[in-house]
Each structure stands twice: as C-alpha cells, then as structure tokens.
Image (cartoon, rainbow, N blue to C red; front, side, top):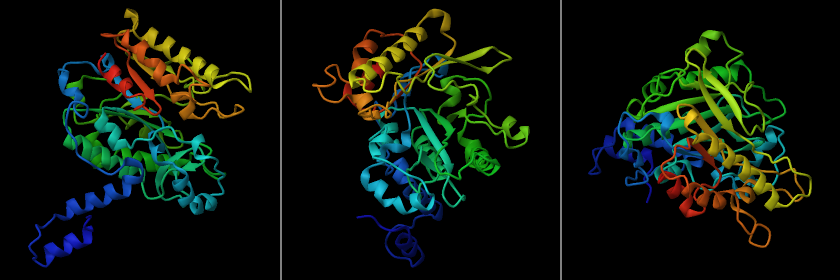
Length: 385
C-alpha cells in the first residue's frame, strides 16, 4: 500500500506511532513520483549489473571503457494508452501524432535500465505547451506532462547517491518539430542552462570541460554530452557549461562516420555513427533495412578497435528506423526484427551478439541501443567484453 506524503507528514506532526519522515525526504519522494512516467518507479537495487563499474580501477580512462547506452530513453512508456492520455495536451499544442510505434524506442524505464547496467542516456527536450517547463519529446510525441527534465535529473541524482561506484553519461539534444510554434529560442536555452548549473547539478555533474577523465573522477557523477548550442544567449553561458560539446551544426544528419573535434587545443576527437535512417528504396524489405543499419554499425565498431584510435572517443548508435518506407520499419522492427518469415536473421540487436562475442577484450566505446534488453544476451555480451 502506498502512503501519501501528506499522510506521512501529518503522522509526524501529530505525534503518532509511525516514524517521522523529514520534509526533505517527502519532497524528494514527490519529485520522484512526478518523474516516474519517464524515469520509472524508483527502486534501489544492488548487484552485478547495477554496480558493474566496481570491477574497474579508479585509474581507468573513460575513453577506454565500453559504455552501453539507450537511444530516446524517455520513450519507453509511450504506449497507445499514454498517447490517448496526453491527447488533450497534444491537441492544445496543435501537434499531430501517429501510431505510437513511430516514436517508441524502448520498453524499459530509465531506472530499470540503470539497474540493468545501462550508463549512457539520450534525452530529447523542449518546452511544454505552456512554455513553462522543459519536458521530453520524440518529434511531436510528448512523453509526459508531469515528468519534467528537472524531475528526471533528480532521479539520476538519487540513483547515483545510492550507487556511488557508478558513473552516467547524459546526452541532451533539443527536439525540433514538437509543435508548430515551438522554437529553440533564448527561453528554452536559458531554462536548460539553469538546470545544468543549479546547485544540485554542480554537485552531480563532472565539472571538467572538453575532456573525459578517469572513472575515479566520475564515480557518483554525470558526464554531460552537449548535443545542443546556447547560440541565443551570450557566449559566457556556453563557456560556463561542463562536459563535451557536440554542436548540432557539425553533427552530420544520418552520418555513418562523423568526426567531431571536441577539444581543439588538445586535438581530441569523437567518431560517431548515427546512420539512423537507411537510405534504401521505398518498398524495400525490413531485412534489407536491418542489413544496411547493421553494416554501418559494425563498420564503425570495427574502426573503434583499431589501435590508432585507442585514445579517441567512439560513439556508435545501433538505433534506427525507416518509417518513411512502405510498409514502415518502426524502431522496434529495426532493433528486433519482424518475425522469422520476414527477417529470418532477426533485427540489429540479435545480429550484433555474435559480432560482439568475437571482440572479447576490445574497446568498443559507447554503444546506443533500442530495446536494449532483447535478446537477453546482448547486454551481457557487451558488458563482458
């Protein structure tokens, strides 16, 4: 039975036998409850998957680690029921949404992903329909009206407090095309800046700029991956943010091999594969679209293991869709396949398992997945490299 925060507070004030709960705890519980449509219902778990970074010494360089991640991590709860529930807000913003399968890229909550071993998260934000809070979108699909970016950040802060051996990477990207009137204007950028420079953020985000340090430096903290610009604000705002900056102006759309220098003074480069939309002909089979994406992903990983790139950051996105195809290849089809009759070799995820098994002992880098928990051996294989 869930006891409301008000009931708990009343019990403490009235001197009943239930143990008193601090106002700070009640406030945090309220924030985590508001965050739950995106972050998930908070559960503290320990164990091999939830604390896998314990196995690595403090001096391990983050750039040398294999970090599993999830693409569009806020979409796990975007079912037909969620879409219907949010339809009033969506209509208020004059947005048109389609079958939820167009937008859903995960089916495991963020907190469950953390407890399963995921350590990199793709977060897509924009202002809500009232222009008052930053919330999560995938294109036109609002993920929740109550779970703000700030609420979800507190979920990460609580999880890291409970798991001080771990570190997390958060990629923030402004989501365009949310509503006809939406703009990445100064109000949006200032709202994000304020969240990322708050007292809580300064405590939990690694404050280093333009460089990945060691695991020891980052334990219990978040590394910010900035897939956004603050070009509507004075340059001092951009200069005050920590983390690695990957300007969207330099991120080649649908690029299979993108080189992004994130520290020019020290010649530090990230190599990115983000070939998310296979450029096949209309009417091409799901099997063909999966093969095109698999080939781009494995080619990039093969580059990552070459000795000359050992000290470069590799960020590979195994996620994809081709919803413009007929019939559409939704993210789930690309990741998991569409049944043995249509995709006898399975989706990208299943095909990655034997490929990764042959890379034992190799540095792959950050690997972003859709529906990461399927097949079950995929994440175990990756974490066992």
